[in-house]
Image 1 (cartoon, one colour):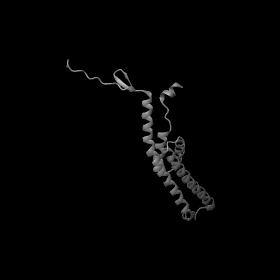
Image 2: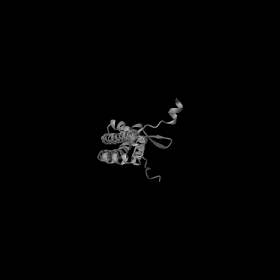
Image 3: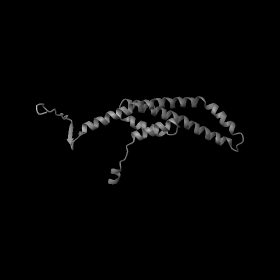
Image 4: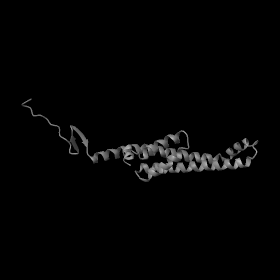
Length: 163
């Protein structure tokens, strides 16, 4: 080995050597987080677009079957003391379900398209859409909770203890 030249490993210029290990410098950390965020946000945007289309279609179906739902609910009210109040309440709840479905679908589509286009406004749209989607089982709950976990900032215990 005395005659052979020892090969040394060259340390890349963007790395720092501390205690025998390599630590990336700050620009490398931000770049990795940015690329990881893009990899996570693309499928999330696609899922929200698909869910939004599903909710808009659900709203259309609710509109088309409104007369049938009214007749079916009215058949249950034949032995109730005040059927007119309950029928009015049924119509109010039914209209609320239709509006909720359309609003959640439109926000989901708009937020999904914004997230796919790397827009900052998509985050707010998806947070509102995920809160509204929690009313639908099981898909709305799953997608809504996942989106809230991903998009809402987590408070660390260090910042809570510092206050």
